[in-house]
Image (cartoon, rainbow over all chains, first blue to last red; front, side, top):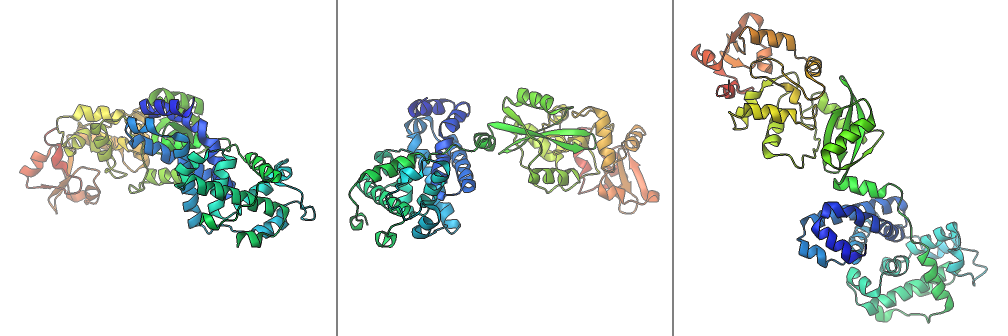
Length: 192
Length: 274
């Protein structure tokens, strides 16, 4: 069921349809939270909280409003806001990118090793996730939404309330920082 | 902000970074979807809870406790609950700790322990009856007619009995503390009258003595020293010295003898229904 069909069904029968919404979106809500927060436990709580809040919000909306919702972007907004609140509540684990690269990435002796190689295996994915989690938030969130979740720039713009051009630059910059971190090269200069 | 960002020229490695990131999409932990559905109240969980009358099966969701039932085994309890609630119900090994603790304290007589209830689909009248039953302290009983009068529906005695019979959360809402207006202990939804006796006896009430007194026409108990008249199980009535106890058949008789109604147990209210 695509999102507009799902929205139509939700508008007609929220309680009967909400389970389909959960199954369609729970993995991506979790993945976004996991990659933004870098912690499975927090990610699980945020994904649960986001979908429960979505249900309560939908229960208060008129059917016409539910039909017009762009569910994917709307749910993402809830997840991102909860991630940000959590980031503000608990001091964010801001490990400097340089030290993470030293700790987790492939030996810096081979600067040609790129993130795709790192991601080839599960523990390499974990390292990439750690590098991602260490990106400054304004780059990390757009990168996660664009490249982990595959949202379009139009959807990103809806979720984050920034112009598409800004977001493209931020994603671009975030990827460059990640690449540099993975290769263990001069990050201080790039983040200056 | 963006103008100050220096964006390096795209390179093959740049695209590979994006490809690597796509592999970071993750699958939610097993059970997360069910946790969400339980929290919204679209799915229930059910778990056993030990009680003096056997294993209780307690159903709950994010809105509160939705049912307390007596059953031999979990699957039977779940099947009954699903049929009644029309919600998918998942069998759990135990109640969440905070809920188990709250129920244990409520059963031990702490009325102020907060236990949220999921009473969706119930009528305002039913909820009013159950809320009133919650006011009856452990170790005391009141007649159906008292509940009817207290909720402002003095003639709805039979409907009060029906509402108590439909109480989905017996023991948590102590419908066992409401007895027949003629003074006999009466029916009980959770496995029959024998269980009502067991529970009341466990709470310090002597059901046999109550029924005997009612049969003798002793419905109220007055104190010769204070000249106040109470329901016999009222905490004030239980403090009356045996030599000062004066039983009455009705509040009218008590008033005629110069006794006034206790302000705690309010025996006045039954007059219209008795």
